[in-house]
Image (cartoon, rainbow, N blue to C red; front, top):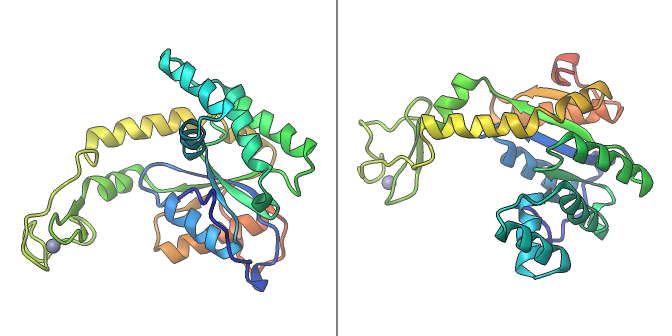
Amino acid sequence: MNGNSVSHPAAPAENNFLPGPVLLLGAPGVGKGTQAQILVAKFGIPQISTGDLLREHRRNKTELGLLADDLMRQGKLVPDDLVNQIVAARLRGPDTGRGYILDGFPRTLGQAEWLDSHLAETGSSAPLIAIEIQVDEPQLLRRITGRRTCPKCNRIYNIYFSPPRRDELCDEDATPLVQRGDDTEEAFHKRMEEYRAKTLPVIPHYRSAGRFRTVNGDAPVETVAASVLCALKDLRRVPSDCKASETGVR
Ligand SMILES: [Zn+2]
């Protein structure tokens, strides 16, 4: 998922502009992971997830990883400064020159401000831009609480949008469908709250700097991908034939 040690193919010529550093935001269930993968494939840039990086450092027992281990053993949060250092180390990677997609960072205003000055100091090709994929909460709730899986063939259904033909039985093998434990309404609200707490603080920072767009995520995957691309081009001042309605809300 993070594309950390994966080599990426060269970007095709028609996407020959630098996407630069992109922060992709979205509540659970909006399809952020899918859109991130589309950008990774389109531009040949890595996706950088701080959660994955932290796990990697701890697994490899690096200096930073051991430090994080120590703090977590004491039940403490990993402080901004340590997360920033881990991100800085990753951004020195040779695959980040054309840009990258950040996932899970920055989550605080302090991290956002640190990243801005870090990018300026290290001569980044462009400042970070933030694109949020938005889906109305009732719709998101149906996406998540309606999800059912066949335990036999793993086919995925949604009782609201793509229900099985009969009751809650798999179309292929008539096995009763099951709901994942964390696809409940209660779990959804908890994850939404967490998303708001971790994301809302950074949005005004990017919005006031003219580096933020919200795109509609309540559409087919390809349509959302087109909107994300339009918002990205517009934020990077790349000429395009996108309509104003496609470049997202500032
Ligand atoms: Zn099945």
